Image 1 (tube, rainbow, N blue to C red):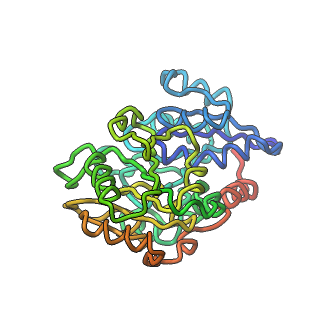
Image 2: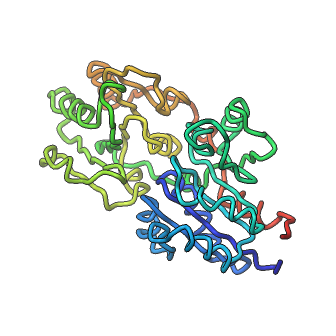
Image 3: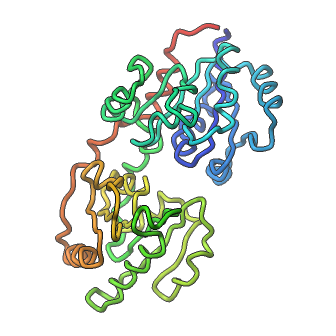
Length: 340
């Protein structure tokens, strides 16, 4: 193997794309590496907005993907995890047989075995190494049957830059939407949530200078929120999430990972899940970050406390993340003694 390591990156789902992007971006600028980016699905928008060149995996057949592997002959494969039989899982065996060290970066504390299995828990798509966020993730994965030897605690690269978010405007509320497919299962959907928020804010009990920005999920069309747009409310799917978090003082959502990122940035966070019927899978339930409201009366009380400057403190969010995750992963690759 030459001194210049060849790395093939892949991503499909948004969470995986966000986790992989910081590593791929830095590696692309490092002369010690030769990088090739194979990106599909919703992750393409992440790389397009950042103007990072990639190959559109959605346009390639299985034969095309295999030929690409043989032509590039990667030393390492680094992928973001996804649900379902995505293109990266189809070529995982080919990568291993071709001698590549295979690595996946985990982006969140959920659906562990499902990311690496077929429809049943068979661990069909295990890589040589899984980079995880913290000790909690490793412990939970081992409990589900993962071999602890392949799990490395590096942190999630996507969380690195959220430590630098600015304080923001206390009168600006950022709503992070998440599409809810089955309202009957959760007790709510994105529309009942935003409507409840707006009713509480417009009840006359709060300062009139409160402003609301709705941030659609990457899979949502902004037009679905047109009915809520008026003088005090706008929809923004263009500005980066980092910039929106910097502008906002309060961040509200349901179970989006952005709530975790907001908490890392030191923002006040509310998970609003009216009529919640299942376990709370938000950052509040999982980590004790922010506040949970399951009805409008609870939401009203939290808004009152926020506007009065007495919003309840949550756990110290910086303790929840391993810092310098991007560098940790790149250093691990640089130091790895590996030959085909």
